[in-house]
Length: 138
Length: 228
Image 1 (tube, each protein chain N blue to C red):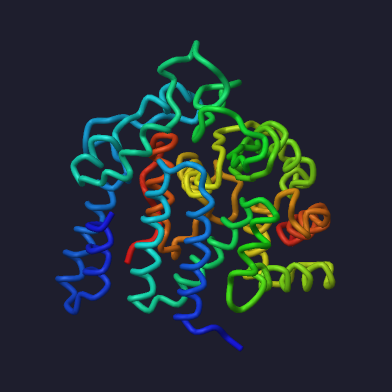
Image 2 (image 1 turned 135 degrees about the vertical axis):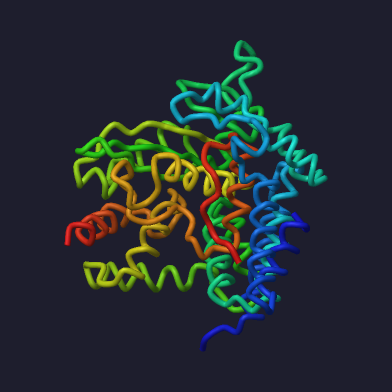
């Protein structure tokens, strides 16, 4: 079932609050405050496309947490695995063996930038990069 | 920041065309004040990716932020990379091998490190990318380059641009990546190998990433992202 904008907003808030709680640099707290203001504005203006982007950004941002903290965040969130959508896409692309739409291409390029050694799909980077290169060629 | 968001809101909700134009104009001015940069606006100069020393010395955002009264962003200046004490302790917060590392005073291998880097294409074009990981910036870049789709297309010469450590560094690196793409001419220009922007034109957080990059690394290109 598709998430409503308020569900996405609440999920974003929860992720952001958790990230803020894990930041070890109190001098950078303003970053979380400012992001929250943008989130609020985007929600209030009913910008569904915008809030979906903010959600993807926060999911990517949360990958900077140590794995055990990512698990803790997942346990706190309503609605399950924070990386569910991303994993569905990666799983689909790997199964297909190719990227077949511009939309998927853009998402995969973004995901690759945020994959680090903790990630479940880190081992698949080579295959994914090859598929991105193949998409670029045609 | 509140002022910026207020002007975005005004523009979004304006009912007449004339009001919308005026509000968008106000928003752009506020965005510049927030950290959009601009040589003509305050007489400051943009740094260049080829000259990190000059980059780190850029403080145009300081006066702009004071004008706006955003104390939170001023706080970031305290941790921004500087070259003021190049003979002091290395590596974080100083230039190492031409790379400015920002965001912490002591390197901590247990914390995430974000980087931006460049690759050079067969025709001399520049690809700008970002990555992250738990090693040193050099190792993170090498790992990224090892299977990079651009390498498969003939891109070579991976060069570190900037690095920042800690989870707060995500936003600054997002902004830096886009500023670097814009610095080299933007997506679609002959000098740039990127086929998509670092930060979508529709991303409401575009100005936020841009401001964060300004504060951590100095500004190198005007804001080109989302407008209401």
